[in-house]
Each structure stands twice: as structure tokens, then as C-alpha cells.
Image 1 (cartoon, helix red, strand yellow):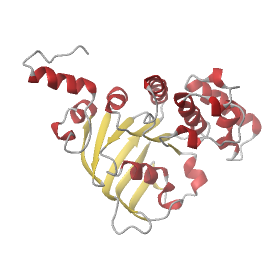
Image 2 (cartoon, rainbow, N blue to C red):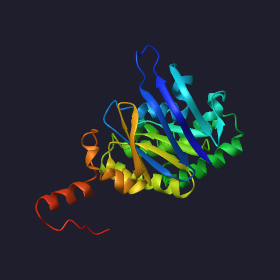
Image 3 (tube, rainbow, N blue to C red):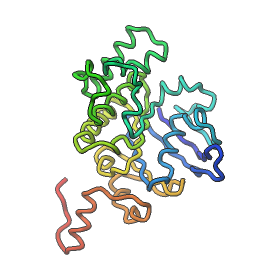
Image 4 (cartoon, rainbow, N blue to C red):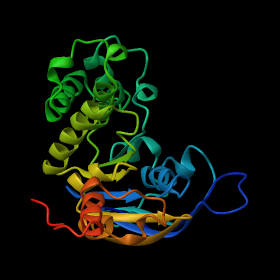
Length: 265
């Protein structure tokens, strides 16, 4: 069971060149795959293509295939694809409906739009809130939450639609350390429960904690991939505009000072 990009190239409508060039990746159920790269490297474009928003909603030209369990999604309606692959962006405030007065109603919004029975929606919302530990926020006004809490509400809304895979475009980019910890803990629980997570992030410390594999994108091309520890310690990261995680930077500083660079696990 997997979400697969097979030799995908993509050009935005009106653009003179492709933003992605022959990108292939696979995300299995319960797997966390990180994607890193400099700004404008193509990370967000990968998210748009993987979720089906590109080219369905924003136009442009797609080459290659996006598959779910080996089945081409090209002819799948957006509402059907959204129930299999959910996408979340970096600004949680923009993902709220702005019409719900409680978190419970907000999380129910997407599921209701799938035309599900009321009892089914209620059950899904309760399960989604519990899955990421925010049941206690159910009666709160979603517009008056912290950034981290808003991001969790946005993710819970996706979960209520029961996608097998989540595509997260810099989910902690606008959050403080507390918010980053909240979201990181929730994502770890989701992966453990079988949800596949594709996460683009500048925060390599988050990816070091969560992901099993990391892909590096540069100029719209996939230039490196492999086990998280290996890729995030690659000395070429700086050339690709990616800051290594704190652990790697500390080890390098200790080595440069001629000290023991072995750190506790």
C-alpha cells in the first residue's frame, strides 16, 4: 500500500520551465519520509502534485504518474483523492474554515463535505481529536488557539476524512518551540497508527526525530535520498541550502575543536 510519484515532471501554468524534473518517490503506510531543500527548490510543488492539487486545481502540465496502490490517479475526482491523500500547509490559520465556532465543528467540516451521515461524521471527529490528543479543545473557538493548536486542528480535520496518507508542507514553520513539540508528538502518533506522512521541512531536527528516510531536492530535481541519519549528516547539505540538525552541527564543532564527537543516543 503506497503513494507513488513515478518519473514526475511539472510545469506551472504560464511558466517557461518545469519546476519538477523526473522526480520519483514512494510513501508506504505508516512511513515518514522527509523532503528537504532550499527555498524554491521544489518542495511545495512536490506536495501539490502528491496531493493531486496540481494540476487539478491550479492548472499546469504534469508528466509521469501519481499512483495509489499502483493505480493511476489521473482520472480520479478531487473529492475522492482528498479522501485518500490529505494536505496541510505551513500557515495553520489559513486552513481553518472561518465558519466554525468550535474545534469540533471545524474538524467535522471536511467530512461533512464528503456527504457522510451525521453519526459517521461525529464518530470520525471524536476519533481524530483523540488520535492527536486534542479532545479537550473540542469546545474551544478554533480562531482563538495558539499556532500549534491550530495546526493540530487542521491535521485533525484531515484525519476525519480518513486519508491513508498525509502530505505536510512545512507544518512547523510558523510555530514556536512549544507548538513544534505539540505537532511533532502528534505526527509521531499518526505514523505509529499507520498513516503515511510525507513532510517537507526546513526544520531538520523535526525530520531527524520522525522520519525513516529523507529526500533532498535541488532545482526541482531529486539529488539525494537515503536513511535519515546518513542524509542529514551529508556534508553536501550546505551546498543544497539545507541546515543540518543540531546534533550534526554539534558533532562537527567538537571534531573541529579536536574533542570527542560521540554523543549519547
